[in-house]
Image (cartoon, rainbow, N blue to C red; front, side, top):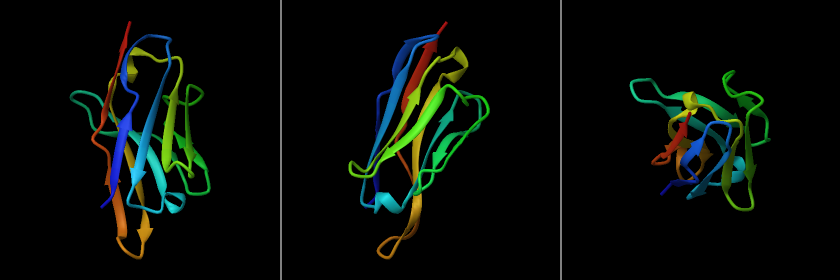
Length: 120
């Protein structure tokens, strides 16, 4: 069973920082691609940042230069460091992992989400 558990969300003032963590289990994490998405009220879920198994990264234009995605394969965990937070970053942040294992086949799994609220 694939499990993704996010942590690190919370309330922060504009200009502040937060680090989100996503601990995974049930997959071969080192072979998985991972990413962070967010969904604000009344809006569609959008990609924030992604990282391949080879640690190539990709960011939404709105967070480039402020957010950093990273992974620790030894801990089966993906991180999102968020600096210079803005009120428009307020959303529920979701972790995603996708890939293939002989046991699972192709998978595309989500965490339960963690709330990030940035006050002005």
